[in-house]
Length: 89
Image 1: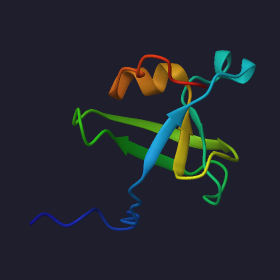
Image 2: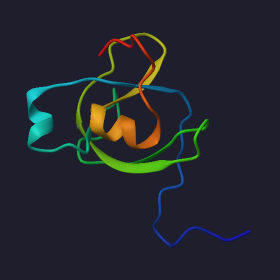
Image 3: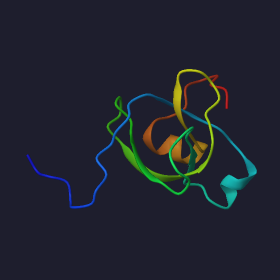
């Protein structure tokens, strides 16, 4: 098994991600929201169902819906998984 590079953070969390739309996404479409990670933290998000991966950075707090770990902008979310019909932002 390959070891991560020296200094790499190997912490991981598994949970549900949602998407939300806000005016600041036009300036930074790869920003995400997390409740506790420090602002500026770079996160890699992988969809378990599609296997696709994106990288974004924490720039806001949230999500505020119980059971969700991360909020992504719609563009970032759509790179890893198409939004379900009728999904709320």
